[in-house]
Image (cartoon, rainbow, N blue to C red; front, top):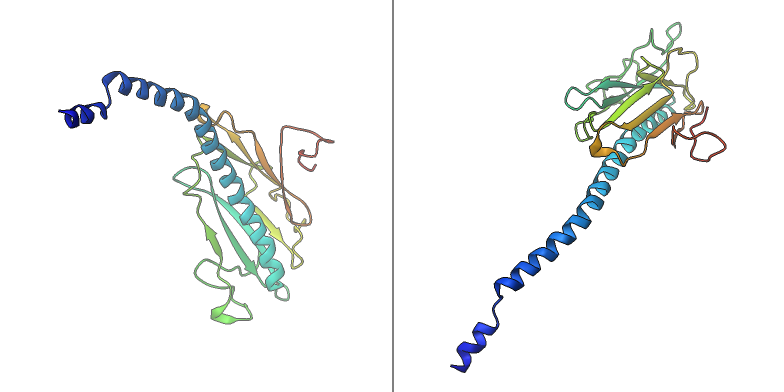
Length: 210
């Protein structure tokens, strides 16, 4: 009898179970908003890093191959973010590598006059499939209509290209991301993408370069 009584005492009563569930529910009510905020912020950071990687890659490949390079943004059909592709081109006499001429690499083939021949550089293509949908975090490119940047052999922006991309911006586009501050990448003439806050102005150190 003593053993049976002890076994019953080790169980959980209905009142204790309800109290425990109430405590768990309370903790979840407090923690879930913070968790959602953290997840949204992490997704926003992944988006800005995705675009920063593309711009850095384009500059790096120009210097690495002593060639002209470009990055081209195209809208992703799934989430309406932007895929990017980095191509390189070797100028030839009478045929500069710009937005109107030159033989550029593709994801499946190197540039025709690549010094390494068939083993040369093939374009780097990155799809934005893993990024948040544009209905959550909306991307915008400045100036309007610009979708590419061209780089010289030294990694500097080719300023002879008139409609060149100068900034990538991300803004919260829904209540799901309302706690995410705007973020941007501003491209300097030296070809370096600088992370900045487009909503503040100089002399604030977070301001985007002019």
